[in-house]
Amino acid sequence: MNYFLAVDIGTTSVKAIAFDEKGMIINNRSIGYKMQHPQPAYSEQHVTQIFDAVILSINQITEALLPANPRFVSFSSMMHSLIAVDKKGEPLTNCIIWADNRAASIAAGVRSTAEGQRFYHATGVPIHAMSPFCKLLWMKEHEPQVFQNAYKFIGIKEYIFLKLFDVYVVDTGIASATGLLNRSSLQWDTAVLEMLNLPEEKLSAIVAVESIFYYEQKSSSSPLLNLPDKTPFVIGGSDGALANLGAGSTANNSVSATIGTSAAIRVLSNKPVTEEDMSVFCYHAIDDLYIIGGASNNGAIVLQWLRESLLQTSESYAELFSLAESVSAGSNDLFLIPYILGERAPVWNSEARGIYFGLTINHTKAHLVRAAMEGVIYNLYSIGKNLEKRNSMKEIYAAGGFAQSTLWLQILADVFNFKILVSGSSESSALGAVMVGIKALHLPNDIKPVIVSEHIPNTANHEIYQKGFQKFKRIYALMKSEFGSG
Image (cartoon, rainbow, N blue to C red; front, side, top):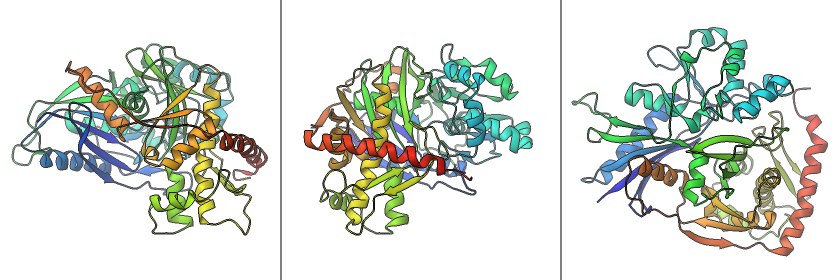
């Protein structure tokens, strides 16, 4: 039996997923870990926990599928992470992730300057606390010893490849999301590094997403991975770009929406695009393609917070979604502004906060859940409106964990008033990593993402949501001046 192994490094877990030659999942493992918040605005993870999760998930899959071995292992990873390491490659910091807002005030100061505008248009990364560029500015000011003493600044996938192959390498997809890479040359941007006073030697070597490394056991007596020597490892790309590939959203200007812990809506384009108001990102994907869109901090994490912290219920998400189905569109005029982790697109406000608005004595748990689901989609719709300025949108490919919820998909269709197409693979980023691996190794490719369901918008619900969306925007506009520490 031949199979391909994808490793998807996410915010809440590492997933190792084995696909057959047709792109069907034949086995999978998920190893979870938590986000740490040691101080207000901080969002970090333990580097070694993520590395251990990668190793354990790979070994669990390979052991389960013996005597077969994978043709290759290919990677997908979350973007915007930052780790300072010493000369031995040991972490000097935790993994500072995309949700971290400690650099919010620094980002706000740079964003409004002409230099900030130049850096955005050069790199395609909006000036925001999410980006390693802003995290490094913060570290330079607030932790100067760490900044000066660090041997390298890397992301989580770079750390994995360092431990496995003793090399500092970063693929163009991940590098493009740092705010340090020039999107035209796909090299580190000299002007950005000069502002940081950061030598290029403190960053990894840039490689293509199809780059291959061959695994060799470092110790025959206690092997790290249960894999044969010379197993190809493909570095892969970013989870966002690979989600478009794996969902089948591969045509120029094809639109994909994903909701995992965070959420995003993106188009693949052969023309890099930036906007004067920094309303969209533009990251390299693969070959001559870029992903253009906006990412929200607040996807399924909002439902997790609601379930665990507010409702404090043992009910499953499926049970909560079933409850929400009993409520009509618009949640009886209840709204959730879902910015519990601050927000990236479309408001680019790290100080933004979550708001339940319109509560009455008649609202129930079901209303709270549905309003949360609708709030996440309203925010995606705001991002989509920015993309519509340059792209003709007619349908949306859905990917990520939310694609398993019929209700959430229908809300997406009704808010956007577009047909929603759902791929047969629930793990689109992992499948995209496999597709990159097949391309890298020049293997025959029989993988064609299959659309297994469609969701047609309900005209009456769309009219309700159009009015609701305008109110959603007004609530945020009225309240945004109250956010922050003032």
